[in-house]
Length: 241
Ligand SMILES: *Cc1c(COP(=O)(O)O)cnc(C)c1O
Image (cartoon, rainbow, N blue to C red; front, side, top):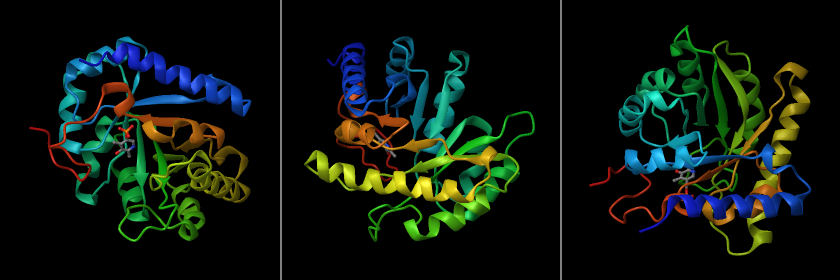
């Protein structure tokens, strides 16, 4: 049995240490609990331990969970690949979407966002290592995409997200995160003051420290909070048993 509370304490210690090393305020870094495939009970434990921001990858699984946990008042982040025919439930149930990689998706999110809700916070997912099989806009498309998305009325462009390829050393892990930070700075040079990006969604269980050293403001952590995901589940959309 893993203890979710203990795991959270140790993840928070890692965040604190890396923030000190980076000369940053640990409170400027949001810890997003990635709860895909996890049962409702585990999510409640994490929420009670202070993690009120939850990340989900699969639309159907997520909307079921959000409905049954409606009384929690959690902040929900959609972080998985998003098809254009699934945007509506995302606009109805989520506060953030981290995985916007083309204008078509952004437009639909803006058009479908219910009027009684505030603008949907979005991040552009960038394929920072330009890996052929990976989702995300290419780095050279990022500025144009950001300028278009920032014009849409019912979404608020907050920043950039990336899932770099796994690397062993801290220095190798830092390199793509640094590239993402520089890309955000480049985009900000072209945006009005009221629209500047304030978010870098980067860092998962294996590279928390590298991400913090390069300026991460949202860490997306699953395994190191909830324990390993069942091996029958992959990251391509398969459902847990
Ligand atoms: C699953 C997932 C995570 C969490 O990964 P862990 O290695 O379990 O911390 C973070 N971001 C995205 C986009 C994911 O799909």
